[in-house]
Image (cartoon, rainbow, N blue to C red; front, side):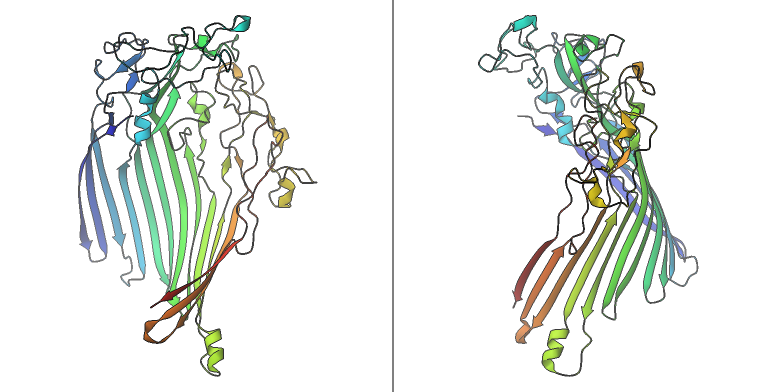
Length: 512
């Protein structure tokens, strides 16, 4: 049971200065002393090729622990350089209070989740947590000899129970270990924005802005003992091709911070405050988001096809949406003021609130589905054939369904072919890696209209009875899910699901 601990020490200074009557600066600076998170029993490790641990003398060459030379608790040193300046500018160019130009920039350091720091404690030599492909049987899983001369995953028999002790460690070879690089840096983001806001007739405000972020040192966990490809590589000899202690060390998960990312967007928003019983607001964003590799939320390169060639991984982020728009409003029906009192009560007092959401589809990563580059991971992407993968996105939406009579699919599967050594157009060692960029395809877009309808019925002494009806996806619009993008799947190219259909609910509330 791991107990993670860290100290957060920081301070900041911020102030505003009116340089001119119509120009204001906001200046700030923050300083953080970033201490690494450490495990209470020092169950952590790093990896330095060629170094031998003195804390755990029987450890494989390269794996070092807290107390070894240059390895602290965490096991990183304290980072003292996290200085974060910020600058903001606001300017009224015409002096009439109807136009504002704003800009801002700043440096921001990020945090790392405790789960990432705790990864080494979940692996050898602290715990036995790995895949054992060669076992005896269900009745005798820890057999030391197997039929047909296959080497057992348990040459010494049953490894359990196992309790870690630095002087008496036990590795199940080839051992999978998890480590944190001593050069790891905390994520750093440069945030930038520039906006022009103008008040238009009718009390409408319109804003046009650029918003950007440039991120560096994002966490990424790679395999520091990734199998070296050669002409005799197969799916079964990858452990003998590892550069460090082959046969003793298997996968060496190594958390470092090599990933960069960028986000650039044009954002337009408009707002009309409540007047004449109507309020409207909305925004539109046109954006692009790239990253040098996909670390996902946990910093583990789950979609990486070659850990020795991370340049192959540059592509869109999973959350990239080229277009996004949301429009919302509130309309209070209160126009009948003469005539029958019953008619007035029935016609007035209704509150109608729609929300319209539209955005483009998410990126889709195309996979081969089998391990064609012989590296034990199987995250291969295929090669492009030269045929366009894109079909008309405006054709009938049901055509993309696996059960469709048209049977076209969402994209053209003939645009891709299996990767593998020597395949023309392949990249990486032996041309074994696929040349299809990561997140190359796009899922269908999303559209939704939500609607709320409510009415307050007021009685004496402040008693209010409210009736309310809400509909999510009120018009039951179909928003298709992402297609299957796997050459090895019989459903490749087809879509088998959609977002939620219409959901309605009603309720009432009495306030007194």
